[in-house]
Length: 295
Ligand code: ADP
Ligand code: MG
Image 1 (cartoon, helix red, strand yellow):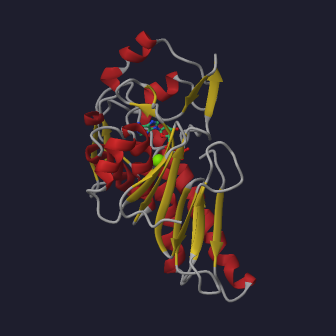
Image 2 (cartoon, helix red, strand yellow):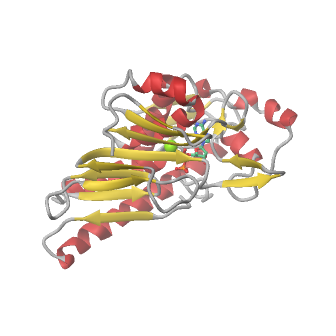
């Protein structure tokens, strides 16, 4: 998935933790085989190659994540759009980024319709309606992976830990001394001091920012989160950090809230139980939802 995964578990001894960590990283590898857009042999790449050719069988977790992506798109009024694949490709994200021709981007619009995806979760089948359509799960798969690894570890009897798939983090239980896990919200300008701090014993935290994957041209920063309305990088936000019960939800919402901007994003968050958000705007201003747990 083009990123770093860090897993911390609490166990009676270091050798006791070994098998759990081995199983956890095997699960990460299994998720990468499903969702990676970097690999031509992933289930995602194979599905995209069969766009427009009817329902395709996929692994059960794949269908589950596609359903979650579809639900996130509906919940966010299309700010999250898992069908932006062809536009992301035209931007050359991440390998060869370049500003595409606006007309060429516009011509892709019929392929980017979120209604072009159909998922049958019980039957584990996904349909992409038209040739040329391409599903992209980069905005939600890392949170889902954190959830899967956490569920696996819990199932193996690991009572506490923290799974971080880049900026998509799932926590459970406490540190060995009984205190909560501590997570810092990074300064988008790269300063060493976190801009906010969280203390958690359950749930997930995801951050979407413009500072991880981007390129600059003529003094303009182009990053990897596209506003589906303009098909250009979303503007106005440096980063948004979302707290939610699961990583899947936190990750998908972080991407969507980045696109929606501070006012619309926080209005949505206030309607969602168990979800809080912290924005750092382009001018550096920090704004949080009403229930944000503070420093
Ligand atoms: P990161 O990958 O840095 O954790 P995100 O979770 O926000 O950040 O995911 C960004 C990725 O999601 C992009 O690289 C792209 O593949 C995809 N993406 C870009 N814009 C959108 C969007 N509006 N909706 C859904 N996915 C998007
Ligand atoms: Mg995301």
